[in-house]
Structures are given as structure tokens and as C-alpha cells.
Length: 348
Image 1 (cartoon, one colour):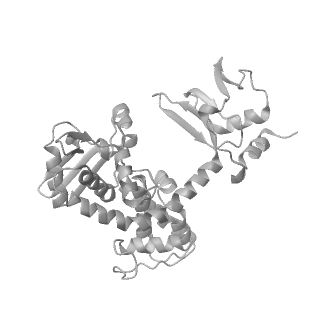
Image 2 (spheres, rainbow, N blue to C red):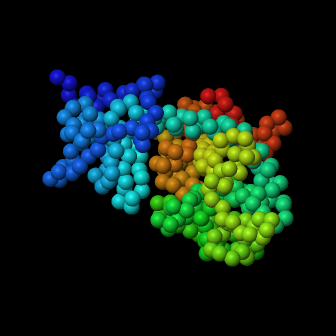
Image 3 (cartoon, rainbow, N blue to C red):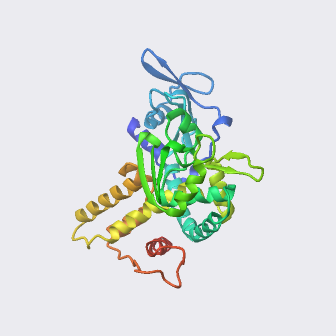
């Protein structure tokens, strides 16, 4: 007889091409109800599930007990395995393990496209920042400039309202202090992390002063040709990036790019490793440094914002070419470290 652990393993080891894309709203699923302190799982017809294979797969999902309105995919090959509402009513998702692997791989492959487009983004931002007034393109360019130079999350209204946690698009006047050419941001971000960011930038300080003269609490607003003020959302920022590049570039790409870049730079400054233990220690320290820049825990930084090939190539003893100055035949709007990282990723 097949053991429960063996059954769970059978469910987990699914090849990528066997995954099915599932639309939750159009797919009847399993549900659960609590009976005398324990959960019972019901099929699409409301009947108690007896199949050990289904029960083993559901147990392996480790759906949090506090979730309400739980929907469970009836198919072991579905890319989306379960959804539910947490204690604050926010919808949460549990994906198939292989789907997460594929999604992460595609995200890191996307870094090449972002790196190739970054010079164009910087060129357009610089052009738009020179425009007079506080028009839409200029304010969006200012926000993209800050995305790159502060790595603040882009933010959204839902988080600001429900959690009092802020990102770039939801910052208030109270979150910024301007003294001469110095700009200081102080606000609570995602997961309650306090962000304290300081920049010395005369042009930025001047533009932010003009923004603070506008009525209302929101820091970032633009003024149209009729003198009307408009708020700016994360969608507006992402639309600006797509318009500039003609590609599916988003604000989050900046954090992935620079998270990887900080790790590359930190590791390139380490002396050659004498053994694997020393190499892993250097990786831990490089990740810690990048996490502090991003405002994340080291675990989240490593899993979500650092290209794994950078770490793998370092531990394998690969030497990186880190030029000391801009190369004439490279990418003129990329730093030497960025050029090295792009070359490294292209050689995978």
C-alpha cells in the first residue's frame, strides 16, 4: 500500500509541461469547514472528501487555519492550488511549487530585457525632468528617478488605507523633509518596516518643494493644462515605463536589478575564497547588504530580488570583469558594474 508521504511526493513531482493554468472564478473547487476543532474538506458537490491522494495534497499545501472562504484546486496539476481570505480580509494565494520555480525563472530572464532598456529609461527621464511646470510626464519621470535612486516600493492605495504602510505613489507631505539640497524620506513601508532615506540632489529638492506647494496631502500630483490636480497611481508609473520602453517593464524591475547589482558589487570586492565555507559566508554578507538597501529581510532579498546565477557563479569561482570606467563599446548609460552584470547574465 502506498504511504501518505509517497502520495504527497507523487503530487509534488510534476513536470512543468504538465501544469495547467487555472482560473479560480471559472473552476469549481474544494472547500473546507471546521467541525469540532478539525477541518473537513468538501468536494465540488459538498461531499466529504475521502480520497487519500486528495487529502495528502491538501495537507501538503499547509493552508493557514485562519483563512476564510478557502478555495482549493481540484486538480493536482493546477498552477494555482488554493486561495483564501486572511484575518484582514485580504485575498491570499498558494501556487504549485513548480509554478513558482517557473515564474521566478521568467522573472530573472526578464532582467536582461530591463538592463537593455535601462539606458533608454534614463535618457527619457532626464529629458522629461527638464520640462517646465508640474505636468504628468515630468512628475512621473521624477518618480522613476526616485525608484532608481531610493529603491522605494511603488506602493498602492489599498496598502496605504488598510495598513497605513506607504510606497512611492502614496507618500504624504509629512513623509519628506527638505533642507537646502538634502531630501530626507521617513515613512513606514510594507510589513511595518521603517524607511529612512537621505539624498543630496539639488534638482530633486527644488522639484519636491514645488510639489509640496500643491494643496492636499499626497506628495506626488501633477497639474494638467487646465490647472487641475491629479493623483498618480502605481498603474500610471508602470504605464510610463511601458510607454518609454515599448516593453513590459514595471517599477518592481528596479528592485530586482539593483538587488542583484548590490550583491554583485559586494562579492566582487571580496578576496578570492580559500574554501566553500568562506564563499558562503561572503554571500550571506552580500545578501545582508543588499537587503538593507531594499528594506527587506535577507531571506526575501535572496529569494525574490537577487539573480541566483550571480551567487552560483561566485561560488563556482568564476572571475568577473569589473571595468574601472565606462567602456566605449558597451552601454553608455550603464555603470561599469551594470555592464559587467549584463554581460554575466548574457553568458548564462
